Image (cartoon, rainbow, N blue to C red; front, side):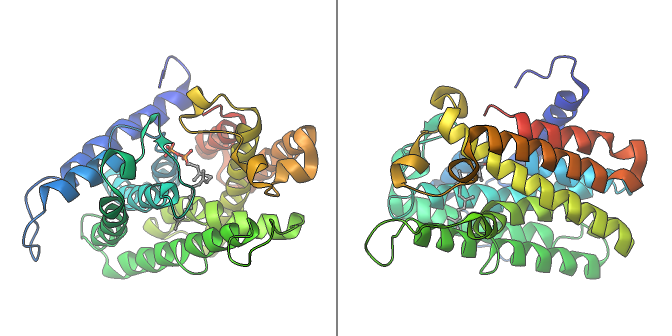
Amino acid sequence: MHANANPFLVRLDATAKDMEELLDRLMGPTPEDGEMERPARLLGAMRYASLGGGKRFRPFLVAESAALFDVPRQQALMAGAALECVHCYSLVHDDLPAMDNDALRRGQPTVHKAYDEATAILVGDGLLTFAFDILSRPQTHPDAAVRIELVTALARASGIGGMVGGQLLDLAAEGRFMGGGPQQHGEREVLKLQAMKTGALLLFACTAGGILGSATPQQREALSRYGLAVGKAFQIADDLLDVEGDAALVGKNTGKDAAAGKATMVSLLGGAGAKARLRQLVAEAEEALAPFGSAAAILVEGARFVANRHA
Ligand code: GRG
């Protein structure tokens, strides 16, 4: 990433560097209390899946939403690291032959290609479990009640009623479970599926700062509205990249939605319609943050970044 002089990119880059260092430290070879050993192959593959790539946009959202409440940065980074572990696990499992069957991720061979399928499944299991290990540590927050709130929120965003549920709905939409072709989804179904599959983790990223900072109900509501808009924008931008993106730049194969005959916001609204929706979502995100004034300017930039991203 070229941070150059753009203040938003400078901050995104700073979080990416901090995240790299923290994940590197957390995933060291020395077992923690209660662990017997960290097998080198598993640890190596978990590091391959989570270090040295990715925009780290979710940890950035955690760090910047937490900064609104003067939460110590190290606490926000711990919560961001937990979230990044869940995100990386989801990418590893999504790339498996039984799911999307992808050979390329972040411009590198996917984990099951670089290692093997069994290792890739265990990498996902290991990263998901590790996320909750990280959240449960006092370095994430000294108050156990806050840590439990984070654990509950991340579990719900990730699991049956969040990302995993959304992935199931996505596979069903492709017609995987009943033979025949793809389901003819309309906007309502596509929005729900995407809110679960992609939006839930981004929403968690935005609300985690409020949990860490013991925000008021109104402040939490504002962050949720922002997070919902960012989640929707992120997925529409992803769908646009699949249609218009350059695979080399995106770091993964493109054109897959159309090949699968899958309904997306781009297939439903058309390219121009999807771009108009993106502009509307950026305006919604900005409006949601109005109560925080100029302190939230970087998060407004974050919404613009999501809508305009090319990778
Ligand atoms: C396998 C349980 C399970 C879930 C998979 C997230 C997901 C659900 C699948 C990934 C498929 C996909 C491309 C979804 C679109 C949005 C998305 C998560 C894109 C990748 O996120 P970025 O752009 O990636 O933040 P980096 O590499 O920057 O971290």
